[in-house]
Structure formats: C-alpha cells, structure tokens
Image 1 (cartoon, rainbow, N blue to C red):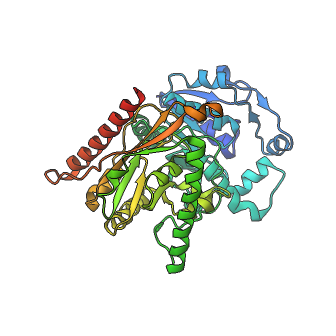
Image 2: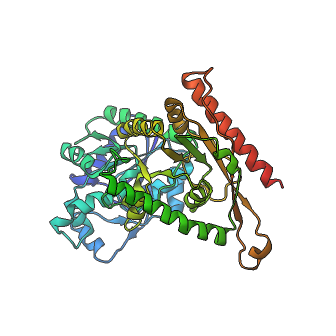
Image 3: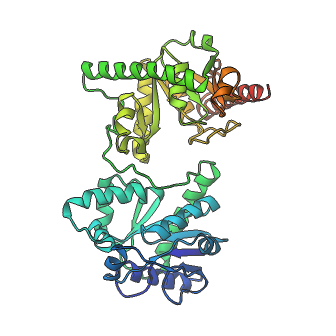
Amino acid sequence: MIIVLVADTIGGDRGVPGIAEKTASLLVAAGHEVRVLSCCPGDGPFAVRKRHLLFKSAAAARHGISYGKPDEEIIKKALAGADLVHVMYPFALEVKAENIARRMGIPVIATCGMTAREYMSVCGPFRMHRLVPSVYRFLQYDFYYKFKHIICVSDDLKELLPSYDCTSRLHVIKDPDSAEELEKIYVRAIADDRIMYESGHVPLFRRNLAFMKSSIDVSDPYRKKNRISRALYTACYYLIDTIAVAVVYLSFGFKVEGRRNLRKIKGGAITVSNHIHGMDGPFLAVSLYPSRITFTSIEGNFRLPLVRWPVKWVGAVPIPASTHLLKDFFALTVEQLKVGRKVHFYPEGSLLKNAEIIRPFKKGAFHMAADAGVPVIPVTLVRRPATGIYRLFRRKALYTAVILPAVYPDSALSGAKQIEDMKDRAHGSMSEALASRLNV
C-alpha cells in the first residue's frame, strides 16, 4: 500500500511525534510505501514549511512540536496515487490533507493521541480544567467526527471519547511494535470509506460548529413530555409555517402543483424530495400544508449554537450518527408512521445546490415505509427562470414544488424487492417530473 502519514512534527521518543515515527518505520519494514507529510527537516519531497502562530507556536515548542503550513500543492503531490491517508494531529495541516483526500476519493484514518489538557497545553496559553469537556466536544465536532475509524494511544481515551459523542470505531495501539495490527485496521478503514465513496454520498467536511450539547434526546427524538409540550410544538410549527408562507411566496415566487394528490392520503406517510436549496424545509412545509410534517435532519444541526433551538421547536428529529442508535431510530419511526405521523426524508442524503437531476436514492426511507405499510409521497422541487414582476428585483431562479401521486408498497413483492420497487418508482416519477419541467 501507499500510505501518506500526515504529522506536523515527527520524530523523538515520546508522545505523538514518537508514535508517528515508529509507525512509519514499521510500515516501511513491512514493505509499504510511506510518504511523510511534515514540517520537520529532512522529510524529503513532501516537507512543508513551518507555520508561526502567535502564542500557539511558543506553547507547542515547549512540547517539541512545530506547526506545518497547509500547502495545498505539496499535499496534493503527496496524496497522488495513495491508498490511505493517516493523520496524526487535529491541526490545520491534517484538516487540509483530510479535505483534499476526500475530494480525491482517498480513504482517511486518524490517530487520537492527545487528552484535552495536552491539547490546551500545546495550543496555549489556556489550561483551565473547566474547559476540558468543551475541548473534547470541540475536537469531536470540529475534527474527529470526520473519520469512521480512530486509533487511540491509550485505553483511557478509548473509554472517554464515547462519552463526548464520538461515534467512530475506536482502536487502541499504545506503542506499535508490529505492522500487522495496523494493517488490519487500515484494511477496515479503506473498505468502509470505499463504500461511502461508491454510494455517491461523499461529504466534504469543513469546519463544524456543532459542538454544543444536543437540544434533543437523540435516543428517543419523538418523545414529548406532556400535553402542554405537544401543544407548544404544534403551535410553533404552524406559526413558523405561516411566516414561511409569506417568505417563500414573496421572495421565491413559490408555486405548488399536484395538491390533489394529497387528498387521498389518510394516516401516516413518508414524504421524500430532492435536496437542492437551504430553504427546502420551508418549501415543503408550505406545499404540504395543512398536514404537519416531521422533518428529519442531521444530528449536528441540534448541536449548533442558536440554531439548535429553532430546529428542535419546529418539531424536527435528528437522524443519529451512531449505527446502534440508527436501528432504534428506524424502529421508532415505523411506530410513529403506524399511528398517523408524516415524516420527511431526503433520500439523496446530502444537499447539492441547484442540481438539475435526481441523484441516486438511499433505501432507508422506503424500508421504513414498507415496514409500516404506508405510502411514500414524492415531491419534486424544480427551479424556473424569474418571470413577470420578479425580473425587476430577482436574478436568481424561482421555485416550484410538484407533489406526485403516492407510491404504495406492492403486496405482490416482499422484503428487499418491495423496498427496491418503491425506491425505483419514486425516483422514476420524480426524475420524469423534473425533466419535463426543465425542458419547458
């Protein structure tokens, strides 16, 4: 394998620099090609310049660490043709390398080698013990959430990280003495990332501010404490929906087609749509009115400063990042569908602004619909050129929501075939609706 080891500082007999050097030596001895991306002297063609930061560089120097400059050209050169990128620190050089690796379709794994106190000491000048929980959460939601596999340098870190919402698969290698264990972990990391890349759902991770405590109980997101809470949630939903009516109709020239397709739907249902705009939620809430829709959102939105409370009170529920919680979430959603709730999913998985195709669907929403025996209501969001009075003050496109006939589970099919059939029919009708209106 060609492995790129990204470590601001490498070398020595202690800490992360020592572990990085030992890791590189073991991999080379095992016959792998190792490219070291670092700022240390003698690092060959992939050495980057040192980065001098006020306060931080002096604090890091006391621990024998220097910061590397995230030079995109050198990083791309090091990553060319690589099978895996292994980052050793949560600093700027590693953040940049991870981001570029994702764009190049290269699997990435991380080492967690610092406690919160060590991180504060290296980054200086603050060492307040009260900041420790916040630092762990910051590192998780700013950096470590990006990786499906993390190598911890101690059992203590492995036990501690899940309590700060780390959902990655954790491995412990305290002092590497052979490449065999590393190779096994690398093979798993490569396989898992390849599945993500092949699915077409490849998030480009950027700085994430979702480090606050969640505003909702992720393990039971549908639960409301009492009747008063339920009434408040309902009132908030319709208040925000009323405000959204004015915003989307006046600002986006919003139109709705196919409302008649909603009249036959009694009881629970799953609604699905393409994900092409940051205002998709209000568009759909307005187009499906008076039905109350429970929107699903990524878990990180419930941890953002300020944003986490409106997202909660509008009645949205988080899709858990944790695999074991995801199974419980599916079961809870099926129960809610059976008692009449309408839940919205974006089966494309991620936002792609102004997309003019319906991207491949994930099957989770259709799996739940089949299990609950409820229909799927496809809604296609379509962009159209500004016309009429909108041409005077709006250069960007206007939007139309097309509500299509519901897709019901085929009783002649069962299991995976039934789910695949629902997914294909919904995708086909949405693609046809989008293509016909774009060609007008």
